[in-house]
Length: 214
Length: 214
Image (cartoon, rainbow over all chains, first blue to last red; front, side, top):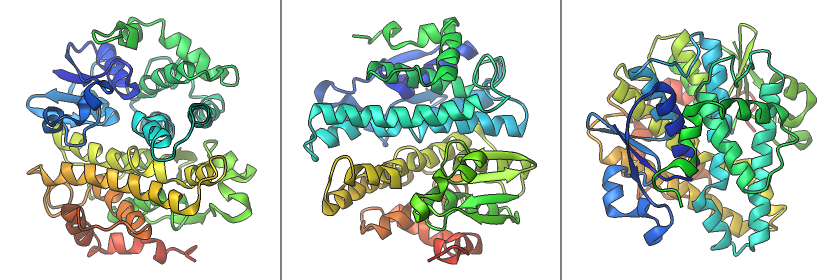
């Protein structure tokens, strides 16, 4: 199994956590998002993933893009250490929490969006930072409400074992801290983040632990 | 089953298609995204969905947010007219296509993002339209590449029966057309869109057919 990854990519970080939680060995194929104008835009990578985004997983000759689709694939093909609960309502809740990060929060702070802001819209750096912080806070605030108001939240986002929701939560907190967002208004997120990071699977997936870390 | 919906919401439109394809009757509970400063931000709706976003599905006392989580829930609880293929690689491909729309394309043209552009960033209307068109084209271009280069693409996005990918594709094309994006560079998307819209399930989910259409 081969994972096209970049140490700081939030979406690749999610998949690394899932692979580690399931104990699946993989080869990391680093793709540098900044070098050479973005290696994900190269002809070589386009041949792997025509959507030209990270991460992508190669398994048995198939290439899968999109972090959540990759994790669902891992869940279906390697069911050990399940990342989704067994009941449909619980599965829906976990997927909904994951999408609150992956669809509502993360895309707005993506590198290509920030480039458009500073390029086409000629936005100065402090306004760009406000944009990043605004969408991080909006997303974290929604996630906090969903977690804090629901008795299904346990030691982790859903009950007492890590799930797909935690694979998304932890990288999002990493981004939030990196861009100066204070976690104090999100005590449930902060508590779950700390619990996750006690586990080796999360520690070893951290950007700083990757072969391509800078 | 009750669907909190808004006629023009792309994410609600996806769920309406899925419900229709599966032949599941539902009550539509319209939430107006513009009226009264946005009814999704009201205390009444916050009590339903703390994330304050549409759509949300109420079933058996559970409330599920996030269109893709809702459709996966429908797939698991009402397996008739399956919206995912049976093989893991095919399921991964369909989910990946769906996320190319739902995570990479749609969030950047969301109402709240456009409000931030014209409000906080004081962007004029023509620059806002360029933003919308830029991200619609970027997303459609990625989707076209994924569809055009893969032999699994059939009459629909994956083979010859409609899937979750088509539930996402059709509302995205509706948005693209609404904001003046020419479909000529995306012949595969245009062809699949036309095939889908021959089906009553898609026709009846169209914004113009909703009880709250304006």
